[in-house]
Image 1: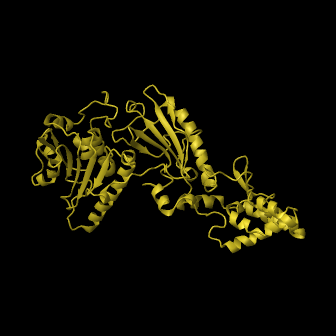
Image 2: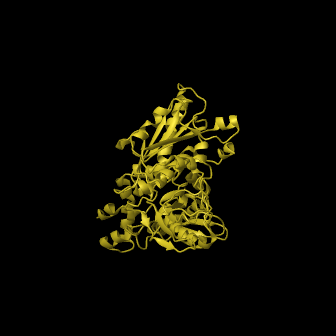
Image 3: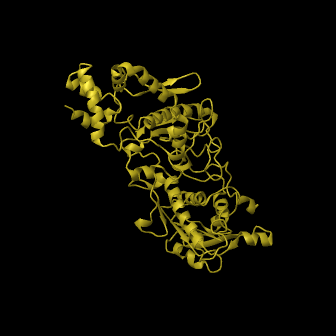
Length: 486
């Protein structure tokens, strides 16, 4: 059975997060993670300053299924199945030692999977692995708390020597991945001046502190946030709030890199499900949709929604042992879909117009060079013949007017839409904004032509011509150049 429990599907980072859940439930304010490289003798330790456990409580906690998922739990409890400590640990190591200190009583219990297999009995051992006593000593300095120690890291390190540099590099990369994951999952515990939890990796100074990652970029001026909406349900209120993140054009390079999260902008779109402020699901659309379930697509990559559920609703939301999967129950799915659609539509506008929609406002009656036309089974992109610059060329083409019209039709019919879409999916945005990276003098040449046309042919005065230019794409993005026209 223990070997079967190892296959639940934890990754090292989700397993570590499960251990920290226990620390939070034990009212820990600080958690210290130690990753020690020594080849096959490497170990990982998680130490907290929580309530600690008595010897009897520790023995019970080490028993698989120590608490029924049907039992009522305190509102702040992050557990559910009574399996997290054991299944998370067994998924990564063959020797699990837990030491706890409470009321001056120091207790240690250990599972050794090789010993269980050898004696064919569920023998919970006392004391650490011989030679590991030194690793437990930091717990004694705290006065109370708990340490979880993983040894025999066959799933993390394997049977490698301490001199295996490639294995060591993988171990160090794992630390980085775990740090990023914890900063995401527990960001609401870690962020702000009144943070309720501090996590440290391989040290206790500020440089070792795990930084919170806010998936919603709430503090950025270009982020669009919808009002919080509480939704009553039979098992308690669910709260939803949508966020449309800033377009890349509105972000500094560092902000853009940070906002992409662990998996990248497209993969991180969708719902972020929390229970007691602990993130369970980081992106995805929970199987919601209209004619079909929504998938993670490039135009909606700026859409993210925060969804808080009570811990009384685990069964209805199909929360799994790893606390990494959730499904919306039918009685709330339609409302969630409608809220998500609104956020998705806003995100698509921001994506399509490179952030021109948002808190800074859009240009009213903006005249664009392209029109989108819905045909029977497809969408077509046509040059807007009424665009002032296009109209000027056609009006002045004379005998070439027919040829110019034919050229525009050729461009419309041969636009490589599929290729653009594939390149966008594979490489992100492949086209910068109009005239970006273009010298101002080159933009000025185009502006001058249209400006003269508005004055000499249309009959506008200079002030009206400049005002008109500010309503024409893409010149509305260059107000200083328009202002300089004479």
